[in-house]
Structures are given as structure tokens and as C-alpha cells.
Amino acid sequence: MPRKRKSTNMDPEIATTGSDKENHTAAAPVQPSSSTKKTCDEVRKEIRNFIASGEMDAAEFQRALDVSPRSYSEFLNQEGTDKGARSATYRNAVKFFQDGRGVVPLAGVQPAAPAAPAAKGVAPAENPTPAPSFDVSAIHLDGDEDMKVPIFETCDVVRKKMKAHLRKPGVTQAGFLRDIAKAAFPQSVKRLNSKSMADFLSYKGPTTGSSGVIFYAAYVFFEKLRVRGDKPKNEFRLEMEKIWPKGFERDNPANGRLWCGPHERPWIDKYGRLQFR
Image (tube, rainbow, N blue to C red; front, side):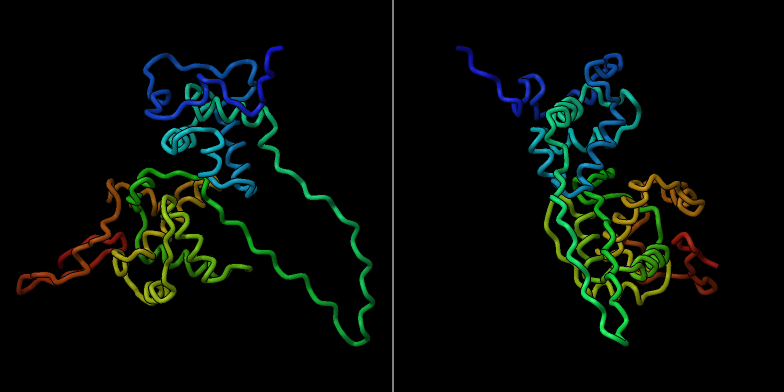
């Protein structure tokens, strides 16, 4: 009697890892198979929703698909209904969700216990504010692999974003440090120091603190939040990309000693450029 094939096994031609040449094939674009009835963009959205649910993190999901981090990142970073149709990540994710393994199980709902009568003169306790979700593990930026994401904001702009974020209900400094470390260093486990964050927040100036790890980690975190929320770039950000096409200089010369002429005075503009009067 022939052995039944388990539904959890990938097809040999689907379960591929390695060079991931499928994302760089020069052949004509391949339309998603009619049997899948899902475009590449739909699968990307399904992957991001699944990771955001907390059922698996990105690394666990890659292992479940039997694909490399490069294949996974490149597929998620593409856009278009047929962009990435040759990718092993696309094919294996389609099979993963078709097999029902991507369905987030719902916990059984228990009947609520009757509320105890409130004591006279005592106001009922308010429900605590739930901690918001800032998981950006499904978002990939160029430079993530070697922790060299190009930066297109100044230190003052990142400080402003940090202070606004820390004022949100349910956000703590410890939780924020964990979030930015996880966003900026996805390939490693890195702990960030609360004193380093306090020092960075106390500085002033477009370039002050640019070489520190807090500036880099916070920028990557907020940039991934922007991408996750599909928010447009503002005018300042677009201008920064023109001025610093390769990214803002973290080791900015304006932070060190400068040699000036007898009638020259150095100053830093709002974009972090060193100027002389």
C-alpha cells in the first residue's frame, strides 16, 4: 500500500535554500499560478499579518518555510502583484497558508465571572491601558544584514520622535530600548543602556550624538514603523535624501575639532552640514 504523503512536507522543488537565484532571474515575469489565487503582494501582506500576530517571529517563520533570510528579506522588500513570483519564499508561504498552518489559533472564550458589587464610596478601578504593539520584525531595510542602514534624519529629528513616542500610553523606557534594539539588530541580541538614551536625549544639535548606538537604533525603529504603517516621507526627509544620498554621516566632522581661518566661524545647518561664515 503506498505511503500517504504528509501535508506538512514541502515539494522538493519548493523547499529550496541557498543562492536564492529565483529573485534575480532575468526571464519574463511569472504570474502567480491560478491555483494559488494570491498575488505576491497579497502573500506579503499575509506574512506580515502572521508575524505581527506573534504566532512566530521572523526567524521561526523562515525555518518553517525552509528558506534563507536573504530570500525572505528580498521577497518582502519587493512590490507588485507578480514581483517575487519565482521566489521560494512566495511559493513556500502560499503552501504554508494553504495547509492551514498560518491560521492563528483562538483561545477558548471563558464566560466572564460576575462582577463583585463595588463598595460604597469606592470608585470602580479603571482597566489598565494595554501596551501597544510595535513589532517591526516583518520589515526589512537595506543594510539590515550588516547593521548599516543608511540614515536620512538628523539627531534633533530623532530626539523629537523619541520624546513623542515615550509620551504614548503604555510605552516605557525599558520597553522602548528593547523595541529599538530588536529593530536595529535583528541578527543578534543586543541590550541598550538607559544612561546612553538619557545622554542622547539631553543633547542638542543636528549632529550631536550621531555616532552613538541610540541614534542609529532609534532611527531604524521609526523608519520601520513608517514603512509598516505605509506612511509617506515628509519634505524634510526628502530633502535629506538629496543632501545625503548615501545617508547621514554618523562620524560627522562637525563633532570634532575644526581648523578655521582668522575670520571664519563654523556653524551647522539644520540638515547637519558644516558651513563656514
